[in-house]
Image 1 (cartoon, rainbow, N blue to C red):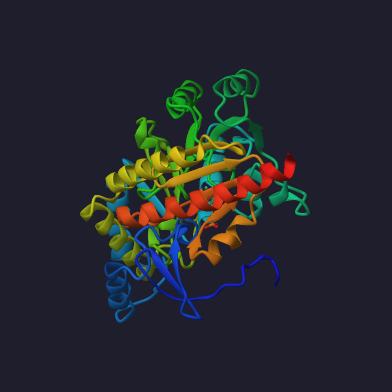
Image 2: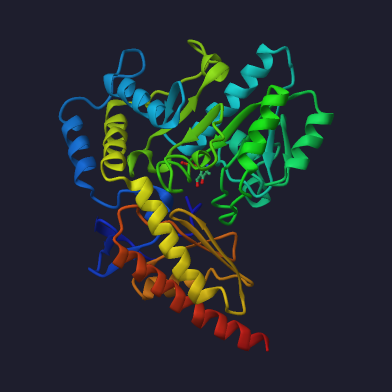
Length: 392
Ligand code: PLP
């Protein structure tokens, strides 16, 4: 089906932060498969874990105990300060689990029409519930009727949440990204997540964070909420959790951890031994190589470099980032830069039309980080020179 507007490029293999196409040309990866391959490509620890597991057992189902799943739940709960895990296969499914959990939590409190507060410009996935939660009409258009039970507020706006609290007795949860990825690398004010936590506590709402893109070290902490110690009740994970092997998780703590009972939710593939071994290897490497700290240091290095080169330019609105999630906002649509970057042997992404988004692997060297900064800066310099001249 033609649901993807694919670039005319096919890769054959990868190593670390580099990919080779089927013609043998080499590219530096500033996208990581959209924040998935945090450990880069062909990481030996992941390769070893999945080849070992493939030789033993791929799948038995959740009818039976799965040791790797139990291990992974323990390891994830340890790094996330959560208490329980449900495993699935994607980010949308992790959010879907969170949405179902919030509704069940509401019904348990006698709220027959539970409502979840969601954000403008958010992205939570492409299933019916998650595209309803998503704050982007392009994702929703044509798929109406959307689901009920959601109310939307501007992102990074505590006053808007307080207004809903004063007027809507059906609210059971708030769902937000700790930094918006697809929406244009939007980073909330320092203290915003702590503010959301306070409002949730005051109203008995679940604070549910979609860490699908920000999680697993990318922001410079294991999870982005740890920058301000705003521990959520529910957290959705996927993407980098398996470094390319599909695995997602919905984690919870406190009352939220006890909402689901046998039969309330499930997934045939969720938490299978192969996916869990991959995720366990990912956690080992992030821990063993201090990749959260590395992401923070490298992210700052890249942000400084990009700001120095690009912030003064006319046509560049903002250069921002959180760890290795970086955004360069331009005044005009810059999707054409993706193919120009490909010609230059560099993979970048453009989101929201005018925001260059960089999501390099956490394992890149300083030299590779500088190469990405140089490559992107050169592209943007040429682009704004051209577009500013065109508008003059
Ligand atoms: N949530 C966020 C924040 C995302 O960035 C994405 C994907 O880009 C998703 C959810 C959906 O994840 P998936 O494509 O694995 O369903």
